[in-house]
Length: 614
View (spheres, rainbow, N blue to C red):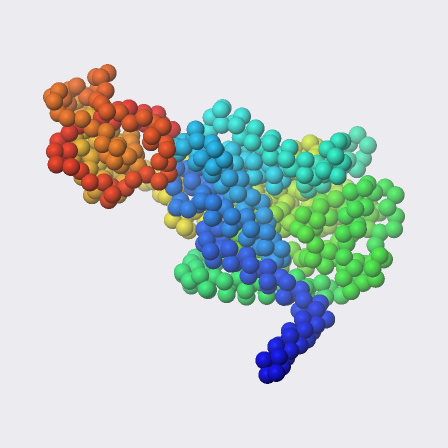
């Protein structure tokens, strides 16, 4: 009876808890958002590398640095599932960055033999696969296949070729075809719905046969780009300081990372819920919609009647905070405001009340222990800033219609902030063109992103490059560091004279001792018989495999240094299929034991040397 009484009391207490919880909209909202945030943090707790967007790690990996566990199935699974809950938690994050890493991770697993593919088990082919996977990730995230290829070229791969171009394009094509098939399954894969083609909505011309902007407004777009670059520089600087503080005080402990996610989830939920309540103003839904297209009418249905009459009024701030990020972006892009007779769907005060807290939260949240991306927050931030900029121009013009509509300025603002954060140019332009479906904006987007990049670079570097340097990844930069250029430092001053190198045909004992007492991952092969000419390079994993397979011969033929580069090869040779079969679990020098007499034998490194720059 006592047990039954206790169980009844427990069930009653749970019932009253949930009844009280869901009678309060704020507590119900807070509970759901916090629960999703904790689930996202749980995946990062299982695999810490799954936190963040993964784009800096992809860039470093394609630069030739093997980041441990970044391409493992566990990391891929935790990032993919964690991203779902992170986006659902209401954080100002996006799924596009993790989708890029997910595409790269799937490609890496395929190259390692998953799915029966075993012809690409080497570092070069795996990096090509990762480049193609990153392109497919962008194509599926933004419905932008060409933008995906250009993103992989501009921000990812350090080496590019014609063959890699068409391979990345093919992967992006397959990703987009799959996306179209899923989006249009209701039509039994017949004629596709035009509204489903563009992820950010389709821009249409306001005037018959004319563009939505004037040529002289290119100068105004350049100014908008400069302001976007300045905002991006401030965002990156603040994010860098927060990340350094986080590394020192939070990241060393998994429990602290989860606690930080919990606290920031509560803060984000409070801001997202209380800002619409503070607005406390209802706006009548537009009634004169005869000139509106289907896209604008569908977006009008997304306006939220938060504390307003449903079907007649809506809350401007709630329609930005409490809807999906892509819906808010399309609303800012496509609700028409030309400055003439069109009433603003979102007032300047409402947009300002959204812009400042949202970009502040995005800066604070970037880098916490959840899988998250920054591309969509940068687009939404830029769209709100650009529309606010358009409102300002219309007010200065006394709404006479001299300037372009606010939707055009919203698009330019999105490009400016996105380029200001990331410093990408070509890929940002093409992604926005493909995601909006209007080629009239080619030149304005180019002017805007270049102005944002030039302005931002005056102060600091892009957010992904800054993250790479904060995490101390050994990235080989494309340009000479500024300190080396100012002091005219040459390569010889930064290099050591005691180079650890090997001869084309070397003693087994020399190779073994070199691997045992050094930690280098790659070694030059030098022909000491002919003026110390560089023959090529060989990796530590290759040398360990050759020693493990005992690919060396006796000294019966009296090989000497002046015969190293003859055409004859020393047997036995290890086949490439045998080497690739062990990828990536190569033997280590600690597991290799030499037999008596092995140290004086010869090992021929010429068949395994990498004699190309890539």
